[in-house]
View 1 (cartoon, rainbow, N blue to C red):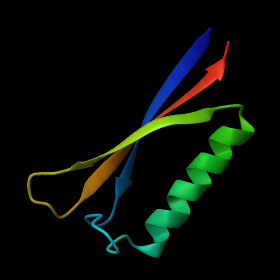
View 2 (spheres, rainbow, N blue to C red; view 1 turned 180 degrees about the vertical axis):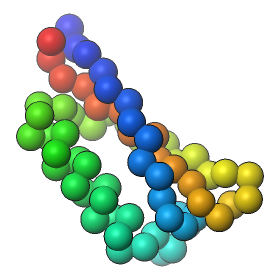
View 3 (cartoon, helix red, strand yellow; view 1 turned 135 degrees about the vertical axis):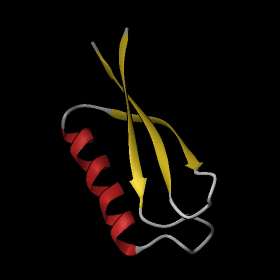
Length: 66
């Protein structure tokens, strides 16, 4: 049996192909590494843009054994 944790990681600019800022990538890596140390495994992610297509967010879901 697993438990799941979903988080929203907001990005500073719209992510398209090579448009991610270096600070966004560092923040994403930091989140993944922190959750991994807590025993969480990445299950899925989904990019969510806003209506203005200026900023967005990535919805990430982790799982770990109970």
